[in-house]
Length: 375
Image (tube, rainbow, N blue to C red; front, top):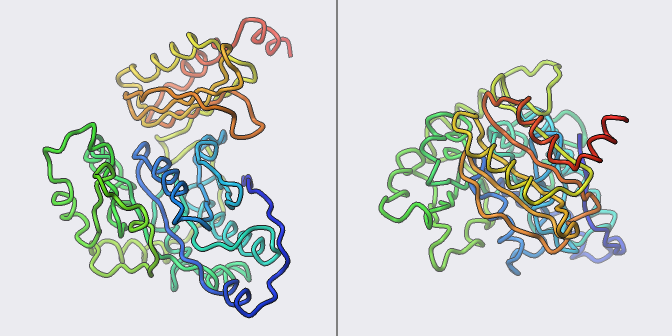
């Protein structure tokens, strides 16, 4: 399931020698990874606000049937932006190649401005190995002309991983995806040090796991986004010895035809996607967020929501939570697109889905619930 969101920018096809050369040069791709709630989207927004990052195209891979992430990314009027959703282990890989191919075709047609770089933001549950294999030379085999075009016109330049120092150690102990995201990184951006304090030498601790990475304190004065998102050519040299092995295993692993629930990742982790078509009471939303984030043992890993509230439906409320930590709520000045539904995605491990769905159902005003029941 693929949704496409980009502003059209008409320009005549390339006619000069310089235009032709630019169209056919290989475009650097940065893979932005990091576990759930580690700050990828915040970092991406800061990058897009940096004038040095003009010409950046963005591809966002989301988990769950109700997309939230793409609405939280600030898209400029000349930014090519595309979302992919679906099976993390295989569909995302295919969708990313398809998205890069579509980007190339849009540039050839003159639908979008010149693209100087691409940033792919993965879902926090993504294993980076199959995605990296889909872009690097000698990785996943080409399945058709589209894949050859992608290989010719794009190359993996960097892998940037956000690492949440509050929950990162627990993530490494519990989720192989978190460890692999760190191990594959060229640059590791440490987040939430401003909350955790500066008593630990995180770069020194993490170098034991990835000695080749460059470590950045997200909150240090002088932190330079452009340095992390620079050009180059991705290499596994000097990375942990597991990295080449993981890539080789992905190339050898057969992936038979199969179906996937787009809201599940393995047998335990799932996304609960909920929505209402009507504005909700601020008090009701506060109660819902408090209950689902303070229920110890609920299995919640990540919550992302956007709500239309009855006190000002034109200004949506944005909610974020990581495990049982609910971050300050924010009101946007306007909706990012024409979808004004209240919607929330909860990602967790062995969550009690029915009580959560039942609780969300009663947030709607009684008249709206009665109308829905009658329908």
